[in-house]
Amino acid sequence: MTRPDPRLPRRVLFGSALAALAAAPAPAQTSWIERLSSLTAQANQGTVGIMAGGVDGTYIRIAADLMNVLDEGDRMRVVAMLGRGSVQNLRDIVLLRGIDIGIVQSDVLAYAKREGLLPGIDRLVQYITKLYDEEIHLLAREEVRSVRDLAGKTVNVDVRGSGTAMTASLVFAALGVDVRIANDPQDLALTKLRNGEIAGMVYVAGKPARLFVGIPPGSGLRFVPIPATPALLETYLPSVLAAADYPNLIAPGGEVETIAVGAVMAVYAWQPGTERYRKVARFVHAFTRRFDEFLRPPRHPKWREVNLAAQVPGWTRFDPGPPSAQ
Image 1: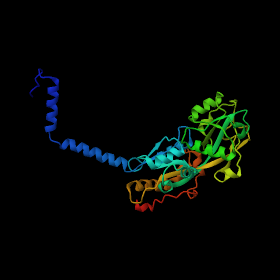
Image 2 (image 1 turned 30 degrees about the horizontal axis):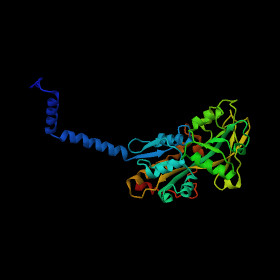
Image 3 (image 1 turned 45 degrees about the horizontal axis):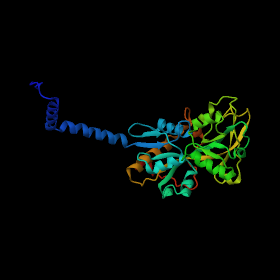
């Protein structure tokens, strides 16, 4: 084999190597490109992206259960992603590539239509199933005894665009209580609340919310009752937070009145016959067929509240067609 002349400049040697590569037969290069393209297509043909919620919320734990139960590799790949709340999740379902499904609050569609957030939103988004009810947690300093005690004080409602921020605005308006709104992430808000920098915080999550479970006894914090007024009952359901849910914050045998909003597994309204429709349809059939697996530990206890036949007012249900068609 002839060695390169060491006296030649390096860029000349490099240029010669490139020229030799360009002149070499292409089949080997074409082969691995085709193979990679084939693997890419195979990996994506069964992938469904699910936009969930923040790291401390119930949504991401539900999405993780969906991933752990339904993921079968290339045939059915379920990718769970952290989201920024119901309003943003709704936008992501419509606008982001790779997002087919999102977990949102049931009141978000009416809110989006009222606010004109996305044109034709009621035709672009449907639902797979109602999941469960999420309780509205209003945590405050110990001296706050009622919602009206928060008038004029700073209350955190999570980041802008979140489901909690949306619901908090509707609830405070319905109760006629004017508060100063803060939009910090919930973990930071809890620190500020414990330090006395804010008076309260609102968090919409299925009980028991992990964010509050670790609060020690004697923290100086308490849940504030939210009365189920006739105006609120037009949209929300009556509920309670019990000592069994939060033993460090509620006295034994005690309950705190609150309200709840439904969580919905929403989906983009793909047209039948399209590739994305077929992906979602396969997901829905697998979810229905294996639903019993979600009812057993270690899955989230909220799965036991799910009624697959429940209707969601104002929403259109996604029709996956017969399993044999997929």
